[in-house]
Image (tube, rainbow, N blue to C red; front, side):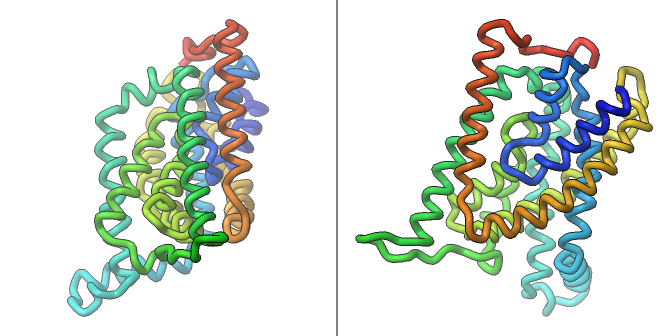
Length: 291
């Protein structure tokens, strides 16, 4: 991997990690369209450490409060009813599905799941799911001529059951094209949570999974193939800076705007990918031979 490739891929990672359009798919597609080698699952996981560091800094006050309350709840029974302490447990519970499936499906994640035909399918299907979820949320928030505005849940109302469902949605993002934020936000909206609540829990829930995945893959960064330490670290730093700016923008965006622009983008990109692969303009395994 060249330094120019790592720059572009770092920018792509930072721009797409927190938007519901799938960063792993965009890293894969950027390499395929440019004629580069597939950066691979290890590169993706490691650069996500950069974007997840941005989450740690942006939500540092929330995280510090949750971690502090959680640790105190281990010895203080009264603290176990505290919302922040419960959030700590809910993040742990929600992280179980992706942890189990991530280990179980490791070979598929690094191989068959990176087929461009599968990515095209997940882009379109999850785009439709996000569109339906967004439409339901908008209907509840605005009401209508014959409908009253309906209450949507906040994180104060998050239960263990809902936290586990969020976790299952997050685990779906092991397949490139699904999108971690897209799947968890869609799940949250379908369960009746507000846009802000769904997005905030999505970001918090991703922290253990992404950091664990990135640290696990660190050992593969310099082991053969085209992924090397220098460019990978450079891409991770770029992803951190860009990712922080995207978080700040996205949290403001979702408070007043619809997810429909992302829905349309996902569907159009998926259709384009189907056309390119179907006409043999692009191989479904473009770049895979090199790792």
